Amino acid sequence: MGATEFADDNFGKTVDEAYNKQVDSDYYNFGHAGYTGTLAEKDGYVLINRPPRIRADRLMDIIIDAERWMFWDGTDEKYRHAYPKPPAKCRKAWYRLCEWYPDRVGGAREICNTYGEKWGPALAVELSPAEKKERWNGLPRGSKTFLFFGMASC
Image (cartoon, rainbow, N blue to C red; front, side, top):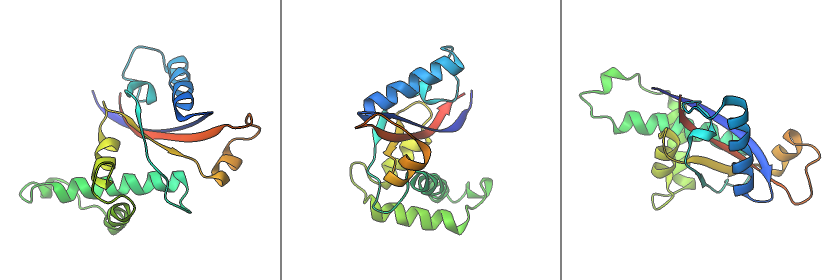
């Protein structure tokens, strides 16, 4: 079985409520059989803080690029020829992510590993007010919106 990328956003008073709504939606739309490539295949989420003035969807793109660089850079040199070198934007994304999340618990390396793991938890980030306004109209008062993304088994 393989893995595929997914990215879904949902709302709730808390991140737990938004997560459960999205999992229920995925079960409804894709069934309970497993290997759907959705958030329903994940065993939870890791909530990360969004850096100031960075949209959630932009942060997701940076994490995806940084993970490509981290994988290639961490590959033994005698095997690197098997993988194309990622573009320079991936290296820039890695350094940017390291600035925002220095290596410690919840650091850039851990975030990238969580993103690339098809069986572990998904990543979650709260949408910026501008994203919330443009993507979700007429939400109940006090609702927050979260983007869940990562790799899932399919």
